Length: 244
Image (cartoon, rainbow, N blue to C red; front, side, top):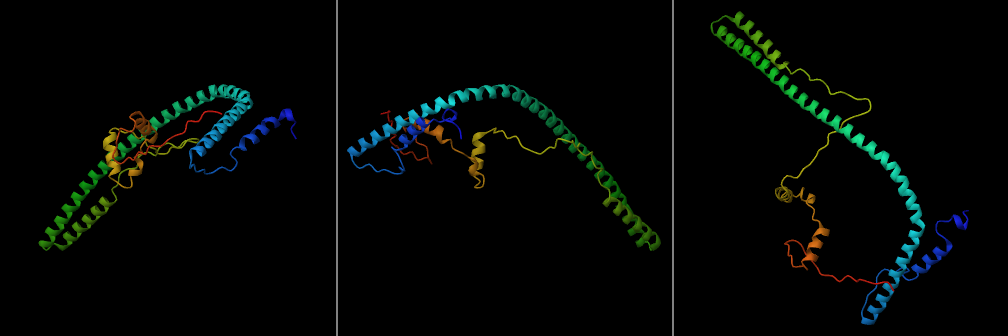
């Protein structure tokens, strides 16, 4: 069991803490009906504020020296980890750029090979059509044997066209300790146009967020003179209590 001097929070401070919470206990809701009650509640609130300040002062006495040590340790480690993080970011950016370029080249190569395959298919299909035309001509002339041979050649060309596909492109490199996932970088180029589009689609309108904190500053600065359709502003009274 730790001795009194080893305890972070002394018995004396804990006594102060217990005394402080006596003023609120299990306080949940209070209704004020008279000016006298208002004065009493104000006095109690002022006392609570005094105890809050006292508790914060006591807390800082304890954690202040500890925080100083923690900040010192963190600063030394951060000097190293920041450099490590920067190195990681630079290296990842280089790998990402390389993979994006390789993917672009692969798509271009695949499109080129598909175009070449399509051209081969077209030529084979032309040959097939010619053989079918020959077969029809031979049949019309009563030369069935020649018609059958031409039909057979046409069917061979049909099969050849069916199996004429693009050559596969080179597979992306596989690294022992790194894999890649597809992610997306989003940039808003026209805020108004984007917002109107999002709001016009029910499943997208949750992505349009209103900065209530910034809006409150604007309302406070204009003393609620700024009226915005779709925004309801209720005036409230916020007690500013001084320490007792």
